[in-house]
Image 1 (cartoon, rainbow, N blue to C red):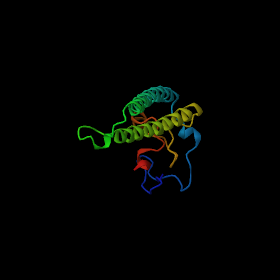
Image 2: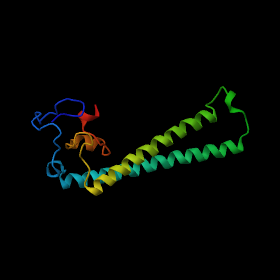
Image 3: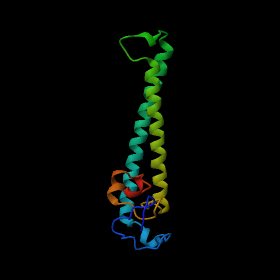
Image 4: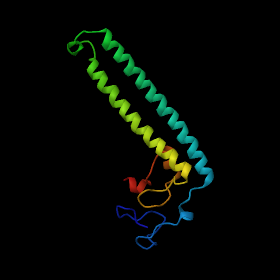
Length: 144
């Protein structure tokens, strides 16, 4: 079978007719693999939520400092300005929110039995890829 980008996928030899999608039985990941991925996704969800909570705490601390200090820190040669720190933390917050959305979507796919299948070519995603990145939606070939 060919990947969306035209490369023949290893192990499939291009033997399927063009446009033929794998059947549900061919695509279904092993149930024990699904349980392991569910546990991995849940652990990742907790880690991302913890990281998001930490960034939110840092932002709250910065807000508190901003209310207390009325100094013009933009010209302080000894430190990072509050504006710079605010921008850095807000960027981290947005990245954590995006990652949390990916992890939540992965949990939903696992719950519905739609996990472990490449969204581009319809073939199984390698267990090693799912172990490293449980929220992956594409196989490594299609991700390239």
